[in-house]
Image 1 (cartoon, one colour):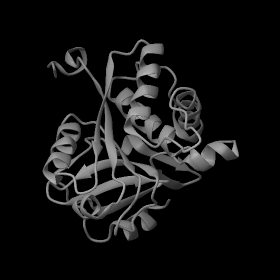
Image 2 (cartoon, rainbow, N blue to C red):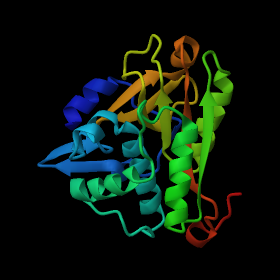
Image 3 (spheres, rainbow, N blue to C red):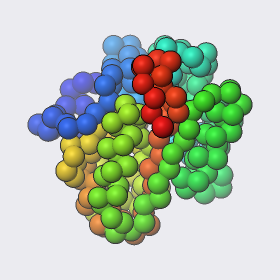
Image 4 (cartoon, helix red, strand yellow):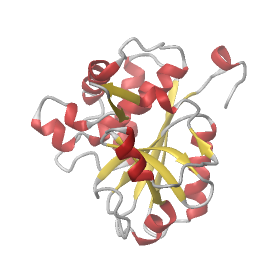
Length: 225
């Protein structure tokens, strides 16, 4: 999606209290058109394009963390082809079932298997969000993740009164204004929506997940427990 289209999605709201330190790492240039994050429509098979939002989002989380940690995971590469290579590999572990990837537990199970297979000392942390969940608790989870410079996977099983995205869908959260508004990547574009409105109106809830490197001392000079 072009930068012009992205600006139309975000409107005039651009300032954020917490956001990824290097959001440009998630920009993919395809023939001069900048896409934000990866797109499940890049998968070659129809079933992957239909149900691949979960593994696509998982690949985005891994890609960003890998860039931050100096590309310790050799699977990733630049551009669309590098992204697709990682997406295909992640699909082997974070694999949607008949109902898609419809829980954070399934997301974590697949990510844990991937991380164990590649012997990565990273951890997948999850939070289930029920209808009318405590918004303060949801906000704290986002602050924790983004404060560690980790993008957040957001599962929306039913969108309530929020129209910025589809239901039964995963997207990537990259920013939180500390109040109600969240910025996210979805199918190549950026969107901003009122997360508190979603928490208060969704009928099915969803969840959040992020991947962090358990020991960051080797890269950043400090340890995050």
